[in-house]
Length: 340
Image (tube, rainbow, N blue to C red; front, side, top):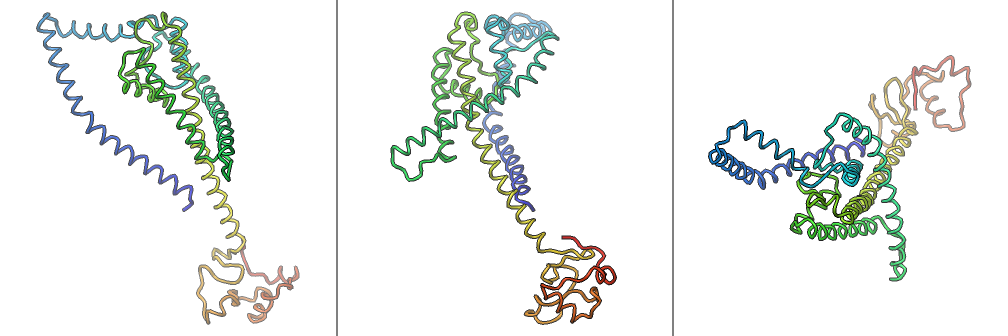
C-alpha cells in the first residue's frame, strides 16, 4: 500500500477517534448541567404561568417576541456600521448568527456575496499569512546572526513557534480588551477570541451587542474589526505553515513512490502474465530446478524462441554483444506479449 494511502487512512481513523473522544468528554461535562438547566427553566415557566395566569399559547407568543427582539436590544444591526460588521463576519466565515437577513433579497444577496467574498477572503488571509511568515523569517535570521548561531536560516519549527507566540499575544490581549468593554470575565473573553479567530463562531458571545455600541462607539467597532481581520491573518500564517509541511511530506512520498515504480519497471519483464526479472530470475509462475548458485545464470525460456536449442539460447542471452536479426525474430519469436 502506498504511503499516501496509509497516511490518509491513518488520518481518517485518528479523526474519527478524536471525534468519539470529544463526544464522550462533552457528554460527561455538559449533559448533567443541561438537565439541571432544563429542569430550572421548566420550573420557572410553570411558576410564571401560574403567577400571571398565562395560557400556553400566550406564553409561546411571549417567547417568540423575546427571541425576535434580542438582536434589536443592541441597536440597529443593518445601518452601515452593523452591515459592515456583518459583511466581515460573512467573509471571514465566522457566522455568529447574532443577526441574519430576513428579506428574500437580503438572503439572495448574502449567498452571492459569500460565494465571491469567501474565496477572496481566503486568498487575502493566505497572502497576508505568507508575508507575515516572510517577515518572521527575516527577524529570526537576524536574531540568529546576533546570537552567532551556526545555522542562521529560519526553519519551519522556528516559524511555527513565532506565529504561535504572535497568535497567543493577540488572543490574550484581545481577551483583556473585550473583558473591559463587554463586562465578561477574562476566561469568557479568551473563549470568545479563540472561537472567533478559529472561525468556529458559536454566537453565544458576540461583541458590539451592548449599549448601542455599533452606533455610539465607533472606535471600539474599528478595534473589533482590526482584531478579527489581523487575528485571522496571523492564524492563517500558522495554518499556512502546517499545510506547507503536509504538502511537502506528501510530495516526498509521491516522489519516492515514483522512483520505486521506475526502478521496478526497469528490472521486471512480463511474459504472458508471468513476471520475470530481466536477469533471468522468475518472480512468479514457474519454479526453478538446480542449485541456488546457478539461478542467476539460468534461462527461464524452454522454447526455441531464437531458433536455437536451450543451451545455445542460454549462451546467447549471456552474450551482451549479441543482437538477433529481424528475420530470426519475425520467424521464430514465440513471445506473445512482453511489456516493461
